[in-house]
Amino acid sequence: SKSDFVSSIKILPTGNITVIATYTMNSYFSSVYGYDEYSDIIPIEASNHLYALVYGYDYFIPGQHRGSGVIMTIQINDTGTINPTPFTTFIFDTYGCSRPDIIHLENTTYALAYSKSVWVSPYQSTGNLLTISISTNGTVIRKIDAVTYSTVNSNYDIAHCQFLDSIYKDVYALIYTIPSGSTARGYIGTFCISPNGAIYRTVSNVMFDFQLALKTATNLLPCYLNITDTLIGVCYQGDYDDGYIETVKITMTDTSATLKNIISKSGSYSIKGNQT
Image (cartoon, rainbow, N blue to C red; front, side):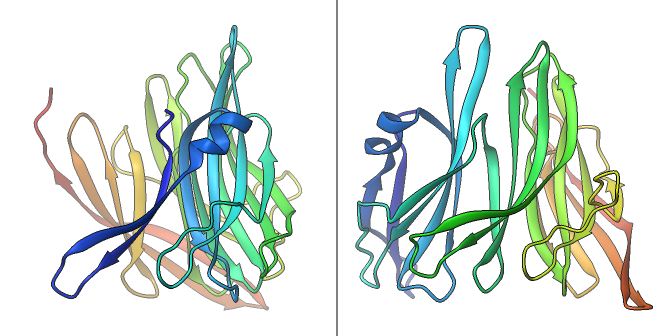
């Protein structure tokens, strides 16, 4: 695509929506990098109207599918005016970035989940978790820690989907999909990140404490919402036009200063669509 935009909008109490300003990203990215795939944006903590924009793009070499993941910082003031000049850019992956999801942890620390698909005969698709530091003035971005949480080989160029959020203290949950043939199977896993950005993992580089498979064999574009401190609602697209809502219980106990978490499926509901 060469239609890549960031827009600021105004929503009135009456429900009217007005576009204030639009920043055309392809004037920067398509000329410097390539074609976009997915993006995400988040406010920079304690900054002066600054935002971190995560951007994944693709370019093609004969017989290969490659791209990069980029973070740029931009300014949007209280009136909605967008500064067209990025404060800085940071390439966090030189092979690709699909469906990124970024959240703020603490102070200048952020966590980013994303996937990439690399042609190595067949495709090798990986899910990745990265922690970074972004200065409050938006001029410095640096990597803190990184781990690959899933690697699969597939004849299909299907990347993971992922959605990341905080559960309790340093416990986080990640919903992600693993490509399987032409479809993708979904899982939810719990893990821990320290306030300084260190990702806890075992000596064998496994970061998840516990994992649970979602209900259906196909799970696309998953997300979840905290209902209570121990219960979350999961939503995703299944086969064809079917939509699913599941509830998941996450139980945490603190024993000998080690936080243990257990996840279990509470229930599910299927929203059937027209299969075509």
